[in-house]
Structures are given as structure tokens and as C-alpha cells.
Length: 338
Length: 116
Image 1 (cartoon, rainbow over the protein chains, first blue to last red):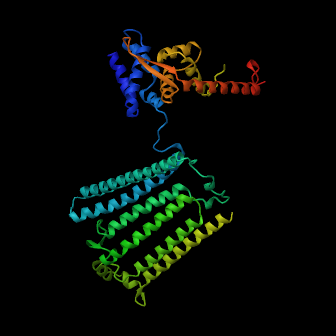
Image 2: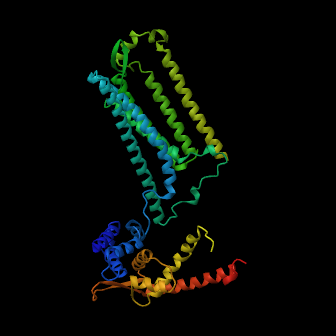
Image 3: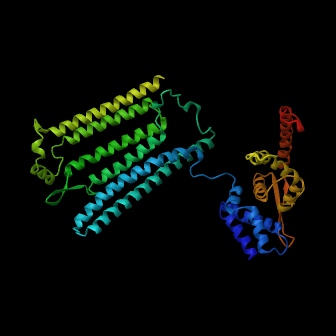
């Protein structure tokens, strides 16, 4: 029994160590423990010595040459800050999408058992939300681990792990700084939404809407030819968003590079949006005839054959893009001139 | 001494580096782990088994100690001895130790009139 405890202790320490060290540590530790025990030691005496040595985990930690981290204290604060807002955001948004898909599935199945339908919707939403949050957790962690390892490598390669030239300019105006957590979160959110968008446009996710005029009806809102146009637009926008995100993560302030990336992205996004919403065949035939049937189109007049709503939206898109560019340039000019 | 909470931390930190000196110094003659532990404790060095054993392993992997398993007895024992490189390191550390002691004494004063 006592021998058994010693063996179990030694095993528990050794299994936490690198394989090449295990056999020797096991032998050393076993010899040391038996030296510490009186002849024919009883169980109590064995326990006393083992407690003196401390928990196997803490002893193994001392045997290790250096502490191990997945994410070191240097990065941990940033990591937590990013998770704190990426996880809830991605989780909640995808959960809402899951509710919609659950509702759609339920109606398509034609079930009239409301408890079952509600259960299906809730479970779809929760399971999708949870798995999306989990995905976000995994990818955020991987991102930080890569940052951690690349920093370590640079240090080993003879550098200092950082460069004095890279120190940020002192910003009197805190607004000129871009928090790392914000950039990473932005990047993750845009990637998630782009992927969802691509899934919609390629017909892998249903995107329909129910309208009730006495009974429920379902339409594919957008026409296939329109969705096919959206795919390259989303891809280009995603690439630009990644460039912008990388620029922000690299510089962490409104540098000229960051500003250029932001301006480029908002102008390109503006061009795509204007082009897309002015497609005459934007809506599917079914949705179009539904709109004709309601009073919506009759209330909104057309100017030169273009719907007033489209014109208003176009103006809003231009205003949005221009104001984004102006904000970016102002922040950059302020930051650089200081 | 009145209980000042971080006191134990200060003492542990202060001692940590000097343990290497004590270990290297004691191993000018071969000793096995537990015997070394007792020797050190008899000399008034407060060191725990769970600090000493990993330290021995580290010093060995840094080639400051050499080791030999003695399997002639009923129980095998690992005997450690300071290597030639270990002696060199010990010599330099002792110099450093002396320098540091002189500097601290010059700053804080000797012995009992500390801080005055």
C-alpha cells in the first residue's frame, strides 16, 4: 500500500514532464523518497513525506526548466479584453440567425405543434450561438498563440523581441490610439459576417422572409443573378477589411497606412453598394410580385424610373462613406501632427 | 519579530540565489539527495526537499554537477559531485557574493546597527 502511494506519486510527477526527462526523474525521486522514509514505514509516514514534497503538479512545475504558457502574462490582458466583447457579440448575432433558421425549418416542415416548433427554434438558436462563440474563442486563442510564438522566435533570433523604433509616439490625444482589442474584434466580426454572407449568396443558407397576408408565405427575397453579383463584392470587401485590420493591429494608431486602408475600404464598399442597390433585378420575381401586390410601391414614387427609396439609400451610402473617410483623415492628421 | 506579512517573501527571495552556492559548495564531496538536504539543514540553510531535488537536476543538466548511480546497496542512490565547470562557477559566484556583501554593508551598515 505504502509502496503503491510512492509509485503513484512518482508517476504523477513524471507524467507531467517532457518524455526525455521522465525516466530519470522517476528514478531520482523514488530514491529520494525512500531515503526520506524510515525503515518499514507505515502509510502515515509515507503520506507525511509526500505532503512535505507538495502536490505532484507543483513539484513537476519546479522540475520544469521554464514555465509554460499558452498565452503569457504579457498578452493575457489583451486576450481577455478581446474575448469579452467578441464572444457575446458573435454568440448573440449567430443565435438570432439560428432562431430565424429554426423558424424557417419549422414552417417548412409544416408542423402545427407550437411547443415543438418553439423548442426547435430555441434549440437551433442556442446551439448555433454556442458553436459560433466557441469558434470565436478557438480562433481568437489561436491568433494570440501565434502572436506569442512569433514574438518569442524574434527574441531567440538574437533580437530584443521588440524594437525601440517601434515604440508608439506619445499621444496627447488618446483618440488617436486604436486599441488592439478593438481591431481584433472588428476583424473577427467582419470575417464571421462575410462567411455568413457568402453562405447566403451561394444558397447554402436559406435567406427568406415570411409575410403574412392571412396565411404565411415564404419568398426568396433576392434574385439569383443579384446574389451572384454579391459574392465578388463580399470577397473584395473581406480582403480589404483584413488589410485594414492588419494595418490597425500593426500600427495601433491612426497612421498614414491605417488611414489609407480605411479610406480605400470605405470607397470601394461605397462603389459596390451603389452598384448593387441600383440593379433593377435585385429582388426575386416572387418577392417582386408580392411587393406589387402590397401598397408599398404605390406609396413610394419613382424618379426617372428609379424608386425613391433606392435614391435615398444611395445618398445615405455616399454620406456614410464620405464621413468615414473624413473622420479617418482628421484623426490621422491630428495624430501625425502631434 | 512583529508579523509583517510579506516578510517571508523577502526572505525567500533573498535566499533563493544563494542556494546554488550552498549546493555547489557542499558537493565538493559526493553526496546523495537526502544526505545533502540534511547537511544543508544542519548548516542552518533552510531549504525544502521539493526545492533541492529540482535544483540538483537543473544544475546537473547545466553540467555544473556530475552524477553517479550507486547500485551496490539494497536501494540505488544517485550521488552528485561538483564538476570542474561547477567549481569555476562557484568561484565566480563566491567573488560576486563577497562584492555584494561589502556593498550592502557599506550602504546599510554592519550587523546590528542596520538602518541607522
